Length: 182
Image (cartoon, rainbow, N blue to C red; front, side, top):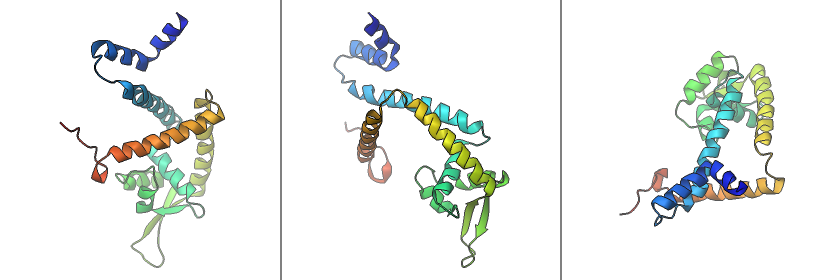
């Protein structure tokens, strides 16, 4: 009885059970992984957003500051390098930089040899802010992972990396999702 109650409190298990009852001919096993991943991401994203916004930043601004911090001294990158850094989309990079500059967290600097090149650099205030916030961010992530052992975390990281490759390979040329074949 306790097990059935725990299973019913799992929203994904309930959805899968409903689909199995309503459409038993369908293989609903992808929901076991991807619906859980989606629900987990939504919860993670809400916590990340709340934490970052409590420091007066947007998640996009946080991503720019972390990319600059990861660059190492002198903590600077061009807008293109920021877009290519992994977690930042190219759309709106300039708007993010404008806001961070207005807040005194970064400055723009022209290249001495090629004046067309502009780099964004962390200010001392920006460096202090991202160092403190990133340490808090990692602690928040540790709390979220507290229910997993270190070995489970490593295994999950490997599996998620494999899943990301699988999804990327399922995409068509140019990263577009493929249409199901008829």
